[in-house]
Image 1 (cartoon, rainbow, N blue to C red):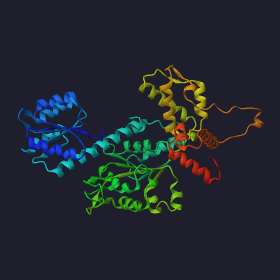
Image 2 (image 1 turned 120 degrees about the vertical axis):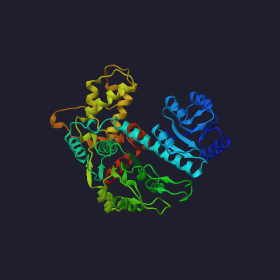
Image 3 (image 1 turned 180 degrees about the vertical axis):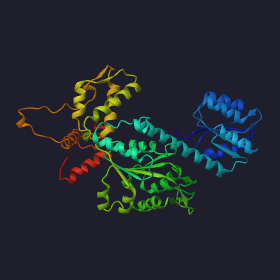
Image 4 (image 1 turned 135 degrees about the vertical axis):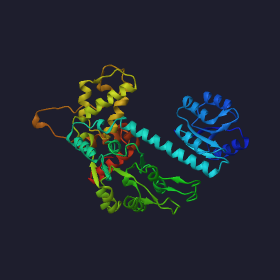
Length: 454
């Protein structure tokens, strides 16, 4: 959660006023008190994201109070302010987990810097928590790889790349688990205890991507009211995941190439050269060779990123892995939602195996969770709760059987869903459990092949 609500504890009214005003200018919710007695009352009745406390107060020791805070509000961050700075007190504050140590009189720029660093840390921890959840909070070797030959090859690649520093390109359709594999690469590496930072290149406006990558100096552009570190700096000594790398604009591709080659850059609006030690992993759901041929992606950048390529298979090409993954998600969500479900019934297994899974593993995960929530909690999850179409009935003799590819079934399913929702792509994608981006990409593929779907 971002830093929003702050408690300021200081027995000097001038300090309380200055700090409160500076924080409110940055749109934080601030409550200021003059004693530890008042502060204790507040933390027992309200929740705070950050406590800024004086080191020496008239009614007690600020460091001792911040230790109390850890017991009452374990998620709250803490910063010490003092006019009696010493090396011993600074070391003790750091040992006790205090985030920063500010010297009085409080300098606005120093407080701004402390808040920027704290917000970057919180954002990083939030992203790492999200990625741990996406990976099932597992070690690299415990990820559900499946029994298919394709996924065993991917697993072998992850193990081999564990201690390597090479840049890796993970390619695959949306929902195949590219982000989970990137996290597995980090967990298997010597950088596993260092930052793991993700940038979703498709979700950030093109005009803000450069600042997101490299940071900016105060005044670099309209709205840049303070200096900000970029993701490359935050990921120093760790791993940087560039998700959907194909979406970055051409002018930024040149600058990214330089960073990958030289491991150095300047912040937007700055002239100081910043060097970083970062292992880069990139993902894409597009064929980057085609993007290079079309002139939308630089060839030299492609080769710089594609040092070690990993191709993730679609779920429909992984055979019975879909049942293995389905049972994994079933057990996970049954625990999460307190249901005593143990397995699928046979009809459910048949439908799972016959469905083309256009949304891949992400679609399977979402569908299983929805089914678990809606089910009454009986030992076997029935096909009715999965809301999957019945398998195509076999009629006539074998000679009359007409083979239909999984890709054709997928196209037919998308077409029927679009017809049902009168061409509303967003609604159709939602029902199918795929992203609108995947829907657009699929329709573009069909158009290029001369197939009219809508």
